[in-house]
Amino acid sequence: MIRKLFKYSVSAAVLATMIQATPTFASPVESSVTKGQIDATKGQINDFETKIQQLDNRISLAMEKSQTLNDQIKIQQGKIKESKVEIEKAQKDLDSHKKVYSERLKSIQLEGKPSIVTYAELLLSSNDISEFLNRFTAISQIMESDTDLLKGLNEKEQVLKDAEQKLHNEFDKLKKSQNELASEQKKIEEDKNEVEKELADAKNKLQSQQDQLAQQEAERQAQLARQQAQQQILLSQQRSQQQSQQQSSVNNDSKSTPSAEVPSITNADAVSTIIATAKQYLGVPYVWGGTTPSGFDCSGFTSYVYRSVGINLPRVSRDQQNLGTRISPSQVQPGDLVFRGSPAYHVGIYIGGGQYIHAPQTGDVVKIAPYNPSAFTSAARVLH
Image (cartoon, rainbow, N blue to C red; front, top):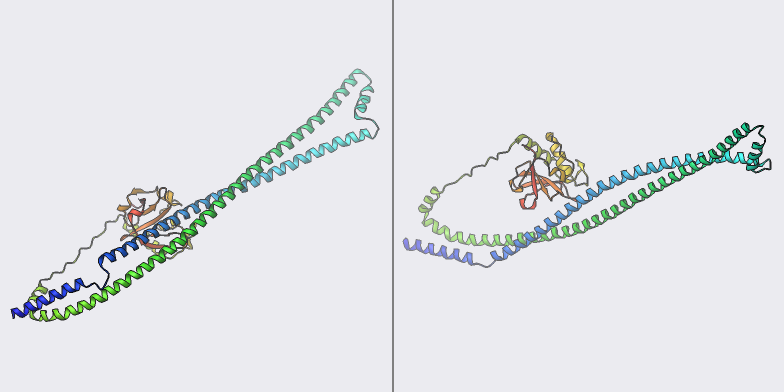
C-alpha cells in the first residue's frame, strides 16, 4: 500500500514538473515584453490626449479674446459713425456760412464794384467823423467775424477729420489683431487635427496589441487546461488512496473574509449628490465653451455639477484651481477637483475607487477614466 502510494506521488510530481517545463505558450519574458509595449502605447495615448486638452484650452482662450475684439470693434464702429455725423454737421455749417458770405459778395459785385470799393464808398459817404468811425468799426467787425468764423469752421472740420482718421487707424489695428487671432486659431485647430490623427493611430495600435495579447492568453489558458486535465486523471487516482488525508486537509482549510474599509468622507450627502449628478451626464459630447447638458467643456461640466449642491465654481479651470483647499493629487477623496497644468488647462472630479469623471476633449464625451495621481498637477477640496 505504501509502495503504491509512493508510486502515485512520484508520478504526480513528475507530471507537475513536465507541465511547468512545457514550452507550448509564451514565456513570462515574452509576455512582459508585450505588456511593456502596451504600457508604452497607453503612455503615447495619454500624451496625445494631454496635447488635445491643452489645444482645446488655447482655442477656448482664443474664442474669449475674439469676443473681446469683436466688442471693441463694434464700439469703434459706433465712434466712427458719431464722428461722421459731427463732420457732416460741421461741413453743413461751413457751407451755410460760405453761402451767406458768397451771396453778400455777389450782391456787391452785381453793382460792378469790388467789395473793397463798396466798403470805401460807404466810409466816404459818412456825414461826419463820428459816423465814419462807427461805419469803419462795423465794417472791420463784419470782415473780422467772417474771417474768424470761416477759419474756425475750417479748423473744426480739420480736427474732426483728424479724429475720424485716428478712429479708422485704431479700427484697422483691431481688425488686424482679429485677423491674426483667426490665423492663430486656424493653426491651433490644424495642429489639433494632426494630434487627433496620431491619437486615433495610437488607439488602433493599442487595440491590436490588446487583441494579440488576449489571443496569446487564450491559447495559454487552453493549453494549461489540457495539461491540468491530464494531471487531474493521475491525481484522482492518488486522491482515492489519500482520501482520509485530503478530507482532513479540506476540514482544516480556513476561509477569511476581508474586512470592508469604510471610507471617511466629510459632507457625505453632498459628495453623493455630486457624483450621482455627474454620472447622469455620461455620454454628453464635449463642446468648446459648453456649460449645459447639450454639451460641456471640462470646466463647464464641473461648474454645472457643483451647482447641484449650491456651489458656484468659477467658469474656467485655471480659476477653479485656486478655489477651496489645495491638496496633493495622491490624497484626493471623492468629490475633489483634480487638475492638469499650472495654470490648469483641464479639470475633472475624483469619484473614488481610483477613477475620475470628466469631459475630455473635442470628439469625445463625458466619461469615467482611471485616475493616476502622477498625471495630475494639483487637486482642490471644495467640500469641507
